Each structure stands twice: as C-alpha cells, then as structure tokens.
Length: 373
Image (tube, rainbow, N blue to C red; front, side):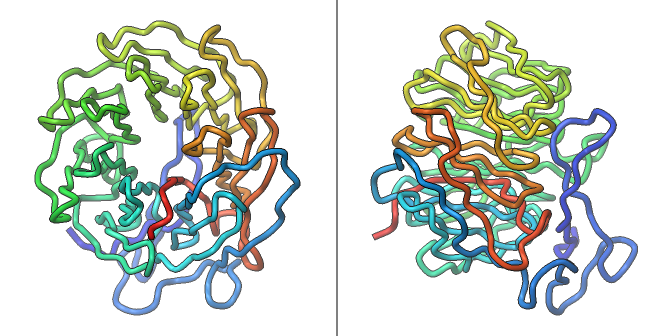
C-alpha cells in the first residue's frame, strides 16, 4: 500500500452517519497521493504552520495534582501538544504527526504511541525529545491503548471506508521490541479501544458492535451486536460495567462486561461521541457533539445530572489520574475544555495562539502520563 496518502482534513459525517470521518484530500493528484517534499499547509495557518501556545487560563477552585503531563493529538495541527496538567500550560509541540487521532502513554511515561491516522503507522515517540519512529500497522489507524502493565499496545486499524474493503483489525504491538506481533480481526472499521484496569480484557467498538478481547491471549471472546453504530467506550474501575456511546440513537448503553447484556440505555441527547468514567465510578462524562455540551451522568441512577457547555463539536473525553478534572477536546473550536469534577463547571480552556483556527488543531486524542524523569 502507498505510504504517502494523506488524510489531513477533518469533516463531520453527514446524513445521520455518526462520529467523525477523516477524508482523503487530493494533494498533487486526484487520488490524494503526495510526492516527496514539504507538507501542504492549510490556508488559514500562520507562516510556519499552525501553532499551539499558552492561551487563556481561567481562575479555578481546584487543579489536578501530581507530576503529570497531558498529550493532545492535534489532528489538523500535524502535532501532539504537551501540556502541564497542574498549570494547564502548553509546554511543547515538538512531536510531528500527520492527522493523528489517538495517543497513549506507557505507565512510566517514557514512551508514547500515536495513531498517525493520516498514514499507515503508529508512531513510537520519546516524549522528552519529541523524536518519533513510524511503525507500520495498516491503513489509517484511529486509536491506541497501552495495557496496564505497559507490555503491549492495541491499535485500531480502521481502513479507508466502513463497507466492503474496510479494515477490520486491531494491531498488537510489543512495547519491548516495538514491533507488531499479531493482528486480531474484530469487525469492520474498529474505532476506539480500552483496557480493563486489571489488563485481562480489552474492548473495541466497531461499525456494528463491541468486540470483547482476551488481552492475555490476544483473541476475540465475544462480539456484542449494536446496530446503532457504537463509537466511544469506557470501562469502570471495577471492570464490570461498560459505557458505550451510540451517536445514531442519541444514547449511552450500559453493558455488563462479563455477559455483554445491556443493563440500561441512557438517553443523553444529540449525538453522544466520547465517554469517560471517574476513577470512583460515580459519574460518566459524555460529549454531545451537535449540542456543544458534555452530559454528566450519575452512574447510580443512570440519569443525566446536568449538562456543561464547552467548545464547538466536543469529541474525546479524558479524566485526570486523580479524578479531579475531565478534559474535553473541541474539534471545531480547536481547544480543550477543562471541567472540574467537583463543581461540574469549566475551569480552564486550553487553546492555541496565532494561526490556530477551526480544523487547524482539532484535538481528538488526550492521554495523561507521569512526567518522565
């Protein structure tokens, strides 16, 4: 397969098709093939490319504690930004990518794995230096997750479409050798992937369901059918409950992780996309793309407690390791809204500086890790 097919532009899928689709844009030919030379730059970028710099930081009552960094995959910004979690300040943008969507870190924070969706690679990154090595996994990887023990990475290989000919695998990367050791066939167009806290199971959303993986044997043990086009997925701290967003149905499914049975279906509102559960399991935060809000779900009552206004087209949601904050990537605003989980209010906005406009940043991946040292 050609390696220089670039899918740099983000468009929202239309006509009731849920989620985000990254489309190939012709660059040099009608087929979207690019030759050697510098990367094309979007017309609304400042000279030198889109830049993310420290921007407005609002007063807040509580900040995440501990020596943590956040890594933001800027899908339209050709980079991964590094943010100091305690201060919400961008400290580096030296990791170069091509339309990356997913990012994950090893438990010690010494390595990052980036789903470089504009290419056929997962990037193996030294976060201290920003140096990256491409690792071929297949067409258009979309998401990555590192196992709790740090020994392997699962990368969803989504392919160029969701019909016949679309990819259907999860690539398994050994973090000791940084090689692809096998592929797992899960279902057409795998999307997001998450490990349970004990590392025994992993869960992958795909076009028509959720694949349950034996993460020790790297094999599918169950497929949970879901015609509503599941997208985001989270597993609670006990490993017993899954939360799956269904953008086509405007719902979040609450699934029994062991049996795959649906315990409840929560109607959250227009096009839920990302979901994450607090470390104590008390609340789930769900981004509603078309409403520009995050729904806060009480997991005990399975009701929406409140909604929080964020930026335009909210997508990925991530919770800080201490549970104090929920970070939400806003695709069209090119920003990250930081929500206090104590007050359920936005306490900071992380955004780029001059030259960063809608689609130039598009933070679609968020990962937290210990600061290497």
